[in-house]
Length: 295
Image 1 (cartoon, rainbow, N blue to C red):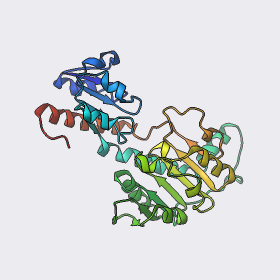
Image 2: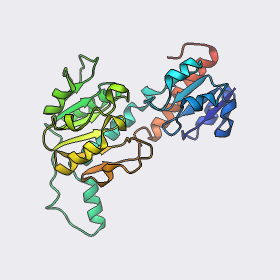
Image 3: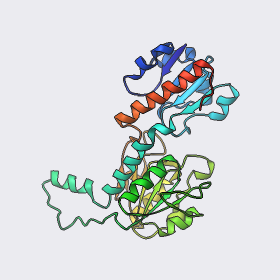
């Protein structure tokens, strides 16, 4: 059995998986691969899957599966799995880091110091304490963010289409109602047809003036042009995003917008998370080789 590692994983992964067969990172051997391991860079399209006639299993190291044509994979008998449990802590911590960085002006403060400036009077901070956080998408990561927000004594509200109770947040019945009252919003939705472009000028108009928004979910859930305009008008005080319409982004209007904090899709890239991803992949492949159900 040939296992193709198509994207960047922890360097220990090939040795960990060698007990199952040959492991390679040579993408030219896709046609011989029975298992392919991907992250966000590789796009498992219809054409990609057709180029791998021996392919039986695709494992996405991470949460989102929008870079995999799951429907077509199913017609070809290819199983698609992700490692959703592994990434929760890493993404939640980045979410909170971004949310703290904006009202504390950490990037501006650091840049100005390196430029020889002393902006002690100009940089006015605000606190997370007592503010209302709205979480859009209350899955594993959203829940983990809520736990951290409670530690900061924020008021935590959340919306999810099929979550009605949570120990760590007050669940509200509509996304729009959460957006209207939140001082901070974090986006943790998958990219599916109903969520594409869901954060647009109409919904941004519902927000409080001066809202801060963090997106560590999926880039296309936000209409970048609308967010850029909201930043320019001051409707949105700050937008921090780790996710983009494409990886890497091309000519994003957010690059020209004020108060936009950008990171290069590093949410799942902690050292600890890459090790957890490897452990989950090991478990999945172990079950696959034994003919056991893949959870």
